[in-house]
Image (cartoon, rainbow, N blue to C red; front, side, top):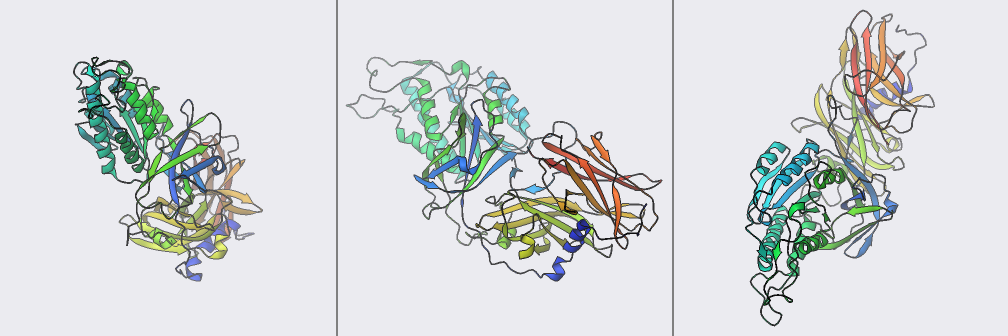
Length: 598
């Protein structure tokens, strides 16, 4: 029963109510702090069996660019968002720049001149198995070389790729001589250079699955004392592929079909033997792997074969922020060397990399301020962050306020500047808020902005004491749930510390999580039914359920809290449901996703 006896403002209510008055007491001012320019380097680390390694620290990583060691300022593990196995997907618990919202970008490159018609069955079976295991967010493209070109542009409509694959056939005729192998290889390498040059200098990783029946190694195709033959294959052409692939941030996997992966090339007659070069079709594959940093895997139709392993290996990668040299952003390729001080692991990277020249007068300055970062949709990832938004009512019980919670992913990091803004679905700025120096000392950082009901994108931009910049976006619907005379705020999850409620966006080893919400508008004496549940799926059976304790916080405002056990739960996402209703009426639920880290 709701009662005004013993009324007191709880710490949690003070947090929210106090936050809603920030705009009035602290006018927004332009912050002078600006971010330091760092280089972003992506790479993957896997076990020898192809399982991603997800617990590296920056101290275990050594990076050299252009032969010079670079200090690793931050190391972020980027996991691809996986599809839900069962039931409806859970709403995201928060927005973060530590997860790939767009999924992977994978290009299937098929050298169709390297195998005969009728040998495509294994390729199609393997590609189907790979596509089945991808997330709906993963973009896939299809390219055939050397003469077919792009068949399917990057798309999340994987059925288009399946259809295009069904039309891919081998074009090889009979057995190749060494000269023919070299000519085909040269045409394919030139096509690869053209394809990567067309992509330009990229900043996000690209997984390239190159399927070939064999390639020639560098060779003269003529006696040493004579001019190069028609099918001379220069070493420099392989190096051009490596440079172009490095600029495109390509992570190379080279997949020879097992049934045609060795032999099959006729030796030339005695006039060409001994000086033209090897005719082994695997030597060129190995040479390409060397210049691109690629991994060679044999193709099978099994879901656990080469393409299945590629799906596993690319499920996550690391993003390192390293110190920049004034000669880096020139557009030229430089040697890249990444080493990990941990036994039994393999590093997936590229031996060369390039960084684009800054665009004069571009939308993002080289050293952006938080406000500069708010004005664009470009992600900034040097500072890993988590953000979320919650709907609450102001002290008058009528005006809607959006409570914003932001925190660095690393609890030891302290922020030097933070600005948050709300944008509607048309991209129009609706409201904004800047944290004061006192608020930046708290973890998490909490503030609020006025808004009307509707759909919004929250964007938070922050800079830490070392100058690292980070942005995170969170899409949500701003609304207050109503049931009978009651109005209900969003559900917030957190911890109880020294009698105060502290919001928390991601949980770890804590034994319980506190669910907190506010109720408005119920007259004294109204009987309320409440419960707090946790479940695996949105509508699944509860794994645990506890009552909510209701206490008065102010005139017409009440706080409901409950402690849900989470200590024994494995890492993953769970749905927390607050059930509230006036006695005699159906219960209304308010939900929030709880994420428990490993």
